[in-house]
Length: 72
Image (tube, rainbow, N blue to C red):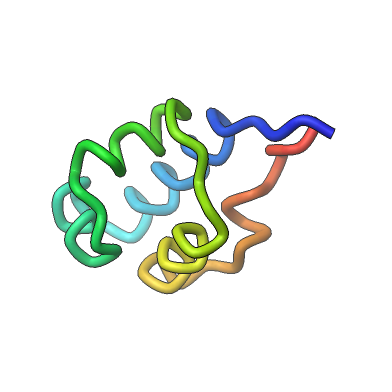
């Protein structure tokens, strides 16, 4: 099974925008640098379980929402 980090990143970006958070604002809340979060959203960087949990907490979403359509 292959993981699409680009899809996860798109899901993160969509959820962040729906929550009305800027990239910089969300990065601070999840304790990522803005560059790190930008790379996650672009699918250029894998997301660890700990990072996924932090993103879910800040975005108030379930992990399944960020992982939707990410597995081929």
